[in-house]
Image (tube, rainbow, N blue to C red; front, side, top):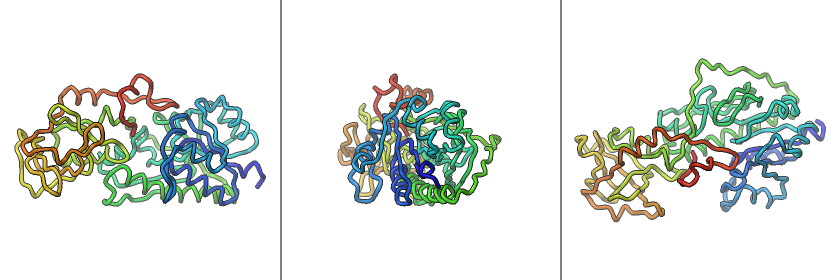
Length: 353
């Protein structure tokens, strides 16, 4: 293998990218990383014992070549690496590649996709899976072409796939991320083996007859609890916005609060829909809230400052979400760019999932 072919160009962000960089370096590859501003500033801790820190700082502390770039198609450093025969691979990148950029890499530009293509295209894959109760996971490595638009259209041909099962013990997005990262790292190792052996990739087209698309979610705008739902529906909804996101929201005495760590309790008997949202018991197990059918036990209730307030809640209190917030959640569209959430909605706060 030539020196140029031993160069890997990573683009995107996240813990998995950093772990894969180290795995590639351990196998003798040189690595250069390109990231959009939003990824450069994200907080990471890729290995056990790492203190959380900024993505860009982690790379710089290890002396790795690192570039913060908004427009990848206009980046001479990136294009130069492609001209010299480097292979590029993306991890959750925000970039859309032009036809000219794709041509420079000559079928050596790939993307790691943590979805069972063609299902769960779009964004917030794990939150949508939790809402649907789906336990099938997959990684795909796609060949990037100019038709691919991150979070909108994933049309590149698939060259490698790894499927896996997500156990029932995984209930919230951070659980899904941890399992997916382990599986993704293994697929990346297989990818390195393929590169080094010079075995040919055999791209396969995606069967769009089974395509499913769900858009990005913005926790601050979308995660409003609808107390007309059943306890099971509420449990899934709150779990979908649990760690690493801020949690699902409702109001208590006119102030916004956030739920995490919930479960339904069918042993508490049945409730009338008029009781939905009422706190009827508080003990060491959590805050017991009546739903339209069963009980929801909430073990983590916080105010907007992040302070735990479970001990301040009294039985007989009622959680309420005004209809206007629920309507806005259904109509809100989360648009983003290389800097993150688009400027017209950044002022609202919250997190993208």
